[in-house]
Image (cartoon, rainbow, N blue to C red):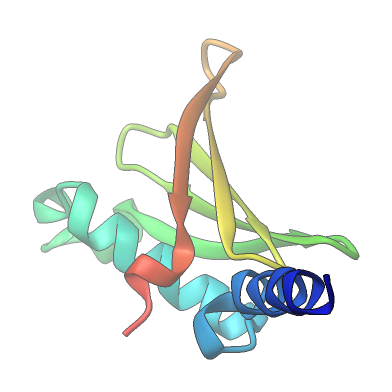
Amino acid sequence: MKRIIGTIVLAALLLCSCKGRELTAELAYQGVSNYCKSEFDWSSAEDNPSLMSVEMGEETDSEWVVVFRSYTGALTYFHVDKATGSTRMEEYVPILGLRNDAGTIDLFDYIP
């Protein structure tokens, strides 16, 4: 019985270890930035870098929000869980007032 409990505790520690790294606001920003650069077409911003951006947003006790602004004016909010790196995305189109869930990513997949 002690072996089973020990195995469960060890497995829980490994799952909560954030892949061996402590997540910081800087890493959250870097991971989201890397994701955006790999998934979105930045060619329209080559001549005018201010067309698209990634910025830190609000912070709570449990998450950081990183905001990607597209050249279209649409915003994607990345809600980064501080404990796990699990990141929920939400798209917002201000001119139309539309909000929709845009999926999830594991932030650690985008941090070298």
